[in-house]
Length: 79
Image (cartoon, rainbow, N blue to C red; front, side, top):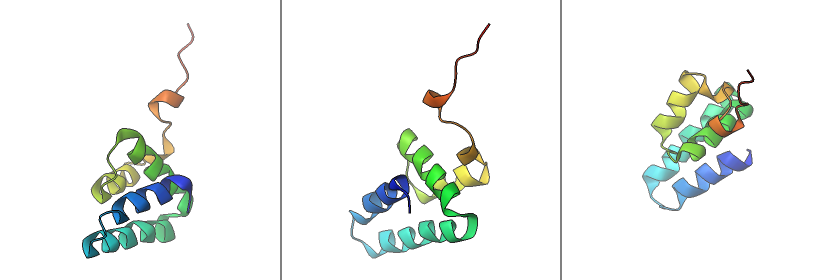
């Protein structure tokens, strides 16, 4: 588990509810299915945009946005 994934998990577990625990299990299962690198990239993007909900992480992965650079990491166009 990478630092962004850990941060997402910790934020969800701060609530200490059973629902949040199950949600963390589902998020971590994504890493087993798609790989920890993709999950880490999706969590990094979700944290960047301030939306760490499962639905958002799933949408990032389904749209392959985890493979795209974050806006601040994009290089300016040279003319």
